[in-house]
Amino acid sequence: MKIAVAREADPAEPRVAGTPETVKKLKALGAEVAVARGAGLASGIPDAEFEAAGASIGEDVTQDADVVLKVRRPAAAELAKYKKGALVIAIMDPYGNEAALKAMADAGVVAFAMELMPRITRAQSMDVLSSQANLAGYRAVIDAAEEYGRALPMMMTAAGTVPAAKVFIMGVGVAGLQAIATARRLGAIVTATDVRPATKEQVESLGAKFLAVEDEEFKNAQTAGGYAKEMSKEYQAKQAALVAEHVKKQDIVITTALIPGRPAPKLISAAMVASMRPGSVIIDLAVERGGNVEGAKPGEVALVGSVKIVGHLNVAGRLPASASALYAKNLLTFLDTMIDKKEKKLAINWDDEIVKGTLLTRDGAIVHPNFQPKTAA
Image 1 (spheres, rainbow, N blue to C red):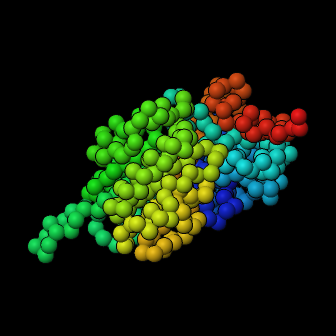
Image 2 (spheres, rainbow, N blue to C red):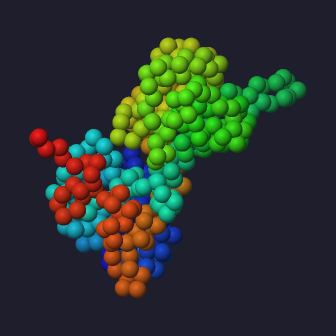
Image 3 (cartoon, helix red, strand yellow):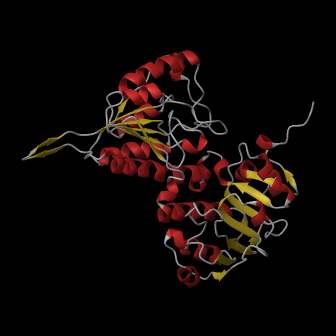
């Protein structure tokens, strides 16, 4: 059983799919582990540390690997270097990428998408969306503080008082909750909103104030999987009016709203941006899916009037060492369920809920029900 930790082909991706800690644990499970030369450098892990953990270092480590661990979905040039039947485990970004899924099926690899991990108790330690979003929420506040140009906490000094910054978090998932906690730790006055009623208590438990139109539709606005439902146009209008009035008074707004498989919902209009005070900052964590903010530009800090709209890409990757450590642990925990500890070899239970939930391609076909090619009626 040979496991390869690949080097990321995208130069904008600093994370790595393995760490010395996870290499040691994979070795203990009976695997040979090979790490691509320089794979961990951008995350602060030199090759020598992987070697000390028991990995071999090489260039084309994926060619004879039974399992390939990656951060991002492999491109066609990478797939050409994988053997048929190899397990490829990564963040696959499958929605809207049918050609890439077909390429993996045609290459004969068994592809698993970590972001499709079922939201069940047993899989919490494998949930890459949570591990990475947690860091993104933290980093969003740090980035906002950097761009804001003023202090976040109230400071009473002999020279006068610095007022506390007002921070508004839109979307209270994992990223939003961490953003609330971080902004509170930095001394800001924090408010937050979400369409899911269950989040109100979470927001208040962190010392922030909850903002929402709390009508009957609001009380039923959550899917069984814990995601936000798309709200009616009437509710959206009422909520937008409430939010628009609130945004005018904020110094920092952080938006985190994403619905899997759909473009990000627009939460902040150009008129709302224009209503904000000079020097205000908006951080759009959904910019890679079209953005929550009108005027946000992927990979840029856009100055709209006197308001900064920050559209950094791969925000978790802006903390590469921490993000890699958590992501590699997610992969290890997932892979651990597929290894026979006595025989020290791969033994995949294809009926396991977490396998079925994440499996994209197998035996030359796309097998996940959400991504089946559409056939003519």
